[in-house]
Picture 1 (cartoon, rainbow, N blue to C red):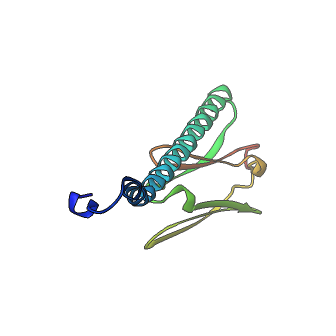
Picture 2: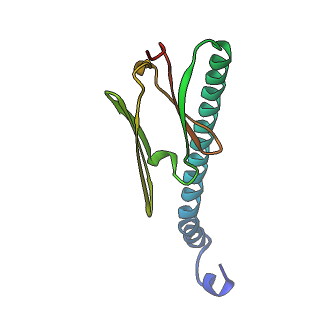
Length: 136
């Protein structure tokens, strides 16, 4: 604040004025820090899942899987939805001017109860399901 604005204000009044001006900014910074921590925690959990998934994959070389990869870099994580019903896996993602819909037909010889979806830090979504028997 300039000295011209402070003329005629007591120290208490000056403090209250300054406090009201900066309180909004402090609150915004607190929200930004909280959001940053939330994003970092999500990234850490994703990384842990990726490690578990890759170690499980390496530990079970005999188990074969079928997987699909999608480049989701342009989509915020909170705007990505995956679900499955019967023989189909549905993927939907959106942002301002882009809406993506994908239907994946699962092969007959997969264990649908073990479908996994892993979102990696570079923005790749991998949907996998183990193969249980060979198709005859």
